[in-house]
Length: 543
Image (cartoon, rainbow, N blue to C red; front, side, top):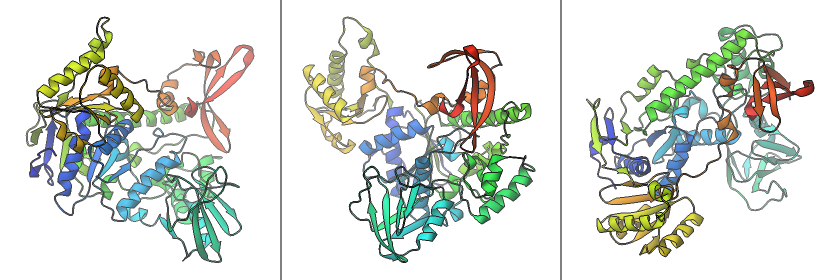
């Protein structure tokens, strides 16, 4: 464990933790969580990371550095600000499941989240406690009441349950698939008694095993019940104005129907929204490197998307019922809100650099880490073998009395790496599953671990060489959502008549943005014209 001073996590203490390269961050975070836990009955460490990819990297690395620590994830929505689509049900379930666990008094060692999630308003703690539903086998339970809860909280009724967020009623049997669970569950009733809870295969519909308890988590942060609908209608008129004739969202909510993207009007359903900081009012906070830049970029993104919606509404360029966005501060934290949320807390900021100016009034602690060696030059050189260079470097590290760990992305890549290094005379190769196994091999063994970090690091006692340091950057296929995240703002800068190229359909002429109603919901589409007058309407969310 890194030897931190006890004062590093105290209310009101601002700490700059310097010389912490990316690969070392998860280890530093783990040791900060351990230190926080030693202080007794405290709230978990709240770790705010720059984005979802970084959250996943840190989460994966913690399984190696500190597998004994209990961790809760609170991810951000996987849709853009002011989108026409709702966040994925699995993402919402992960968010709400984590918040429910905190509300129930569970005390993990840390909570991992992102800037996007931490700067967004969400269900307040007092509201959240009334949203959950716990079911127990052999207990009194009314099927009608459970079905009403499912409808209110975003589940969809289907003839057969095959996907998360669905439920089906068949006589005295209720099938449902809670997002985040591995399998759907079959509830068997006898009168008002819930006799059994049995997981089943969604493909074969055959059940196996039994559960004693099932915790239901909403698939949406918007609850649709008479009180929330009435509140929405009143708030809509007060904040936005009289609804336009044929406004599909207003009509859907008024009729108790869930509308795609309705979560972006969450403040209209509840005046008592809170923030993640309200759920952890005294938790010490850790901010990773680039956190400040990520937050400013997020604020800019929110403003840009809001302005794009306002401009489109004023120009009436979509040719459909207008999208009437709420002001950014209604759903997102302002700069003043962020400052107030951190006020009085222990805040530790991580930096890969040595201490510089601007640290007055802050506790500065250096971990003495630096980025590890990369082998880019050897990869490019014609007369050099990169693995010979790795073997030479490993020997030098051992001679300096350091532990050496080769961090691999998967079990398969670890096996392949072990074979290649053995062929290049790297001695004493040893497979390890956790960081605690590495310390005993300082100066002797070379550990190979499943540790998916993008870059290695060195300290006075330890060295980690990442697979990417040796082989180069991995090819990562960006998701469709990632590629299309800036479509709304970028497309509105195009002019009618501009020539565009579609990967599948070839060269066409951009006619403008048009909103097409499908399945009762509007979708922003690019209108493209091809030879012969053929037209293609391409939904923005599918780009």
